Amino acid sequence: MPDVIVIGGGVIGLSIAWELAGKGLSVRVLEQGAFGREASWAGAGMLPPGNLANAKTAEARLRGAAHALWPDWSNELTSRTGIDNGFIRCGGIELRMDDAGGPQSSYQLELAALKSEGVTIETEDVSEVRRRFPEISAEISSAYYLPDFHQVRNPRHLQALLAGCAMRGVELQAGCPVQQIQMKGERIQAVQTGSDTHQGAEYVFAGGTWTGQLLSQLGLTVQIEPIKGQIVLLRAEPLPVRSVIQVGRQYLVPRADGRMLVGSTEERSGFDKRNTAGAVGELINFAQRLVPALKRATFEKCWAGLRPFSTRGRPYLGRLPQFANATIAAGHYRYGLQQSSITAVLIRQVLLNQPVLLPDELNLADSVTE
Ligand SMILES: Cc1cc2nc3c(=O)[nH]c(=O)nc-3n(C[C@H](O)[C@H](O)[C@H](O)COP(=O)(O)OP(=O)(O)OC[C@H]3O[C@@H](n4cnc5c(N)ncnc54)[C@H](O)[C@@H]3O)c2cc1C
Image (cartoon, rainbow, N blue to C red; front, side, top):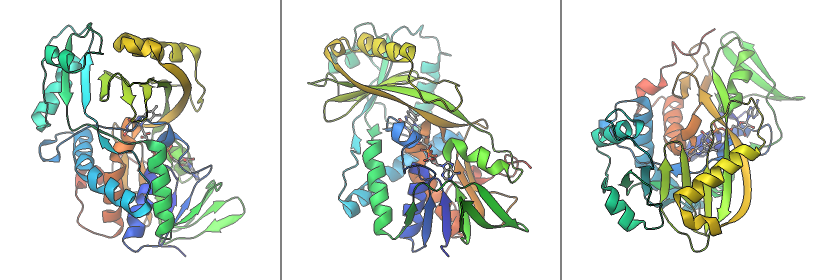
């Protein structure tokens, strides 16, 4: 019987398995489909900077702690598996094309929050940004540059996590949908996948946007909804810009091999992952307007994924207070790639009864109701 059964093989479940197995625990991961093919594969891999020391919100604390962890986290995974996950410090430009400039605009509020966190902002002079990035449209009205913005290539990172987990002896079982949870008193006794029964000492629920559905059979209300995000992939050689560019919720993410990701949408359409002509057209227009040289880019493909949106405004992390041996790590919405490192560390601290880095983020007493 493994020490821990992890339910869900996205970036969250696999990162937890990698971390726990690294501390000598035996781990089995049950994945209903193929490993790492849902939101974690679809995401853009942006890892924005943060600073835990001055962070005031849950999002900022998780971002700050994750930012500090990522270089070593990535380095250990890459050096142990030999798989390059594409983690680089690429820098990020946040800009507006028609910002009224008022102190209450979302742009100004985000800039002020980053300043109060003490995140390094190299310039907030729009003419300096225009000079450094001449391929960006002259229409921009405001801009600042974050030198410590990182990115990772999700599919490669997932491949590295899978290889790393296998090297550490994690049992990886794909095509295993957990359908039933068997209880004995306040303990989970087993989970059932088809005709197979899996018993572990501890259970970690990391099923992304499906987690609420699964836990509802225990009478728990965990409010996580799917929010569709569509992405278009262009090929642009030479790359007109090498830093991530964000304009509110839309962005360009250049990859080192000449590809350019264009994202994204936020749509409530249930579990439907199809691309729509309207959204793809809008993303391509956005890209061409922002960087006119992208008119010459070629279209490679498009896809969509389901972000696990937690209606409480932050992920569900920590022990489920109703049970003796159940932990949850789900609902990371737009930030799950970035927060995967800190999530894995926090869940390891919980399961091994170690001092917890962010205790406030692990209190679920009022959030998971019966
Ligand atoms: C378009 C888009 C862009 C994004 N960009 C970024 C970004 O730039 N930076 C960032 O940090 N984040 C980004 N995200 C968000 C990030 O991708 C998610 O927050 C993250 O992938 C969530 O990981 P997860 O492991 O919880 O979920 P998932 O990747 O969805 O994995 C959950 C897994 O659990 C499995 N599962 C569910 N139920 C069961 C069951 N009953 N039994 C067995 N298995 C089960 C599923 O099959 C799935 O594989 C983006 C997301 C999208 C869609």
